[in-house]
Figure (cartoon, rainbow, N blue to C red):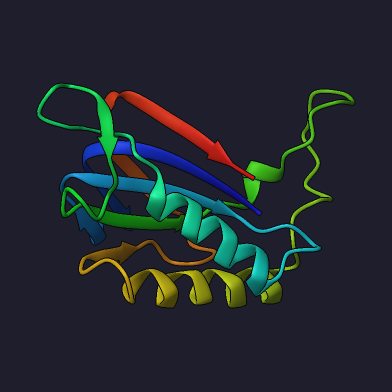
Length: 144
């Protein structure tokens, strides 16, 4: 499983011209699910993501978590995080989880995050989405 976490000032997901998810300050997270992933792996990454101290405190030091700053989450499924570009110029996605497993774990992650963070927005699994954001920093972290 992979979480590509971007600290943002704002972010949104549009599908066919309609905004389906929109947040202010917080994390926009691209979520990739692999073939061997489980709810236990998801729980570990969720705990780590919530505990990351990557927001600035009053002294400008990255000492605060998303909960400390009242941040919001935008969770977007993205199987292309499993792209393998080792051979040729066309990526393969053999390591990505099958859609049924990936959707189940994506929905699980959403539900678990909603237990901890008041504002959780999402994209739509399997949809053609347009994602826009203002990366704050920029600050981007990959959790695996």
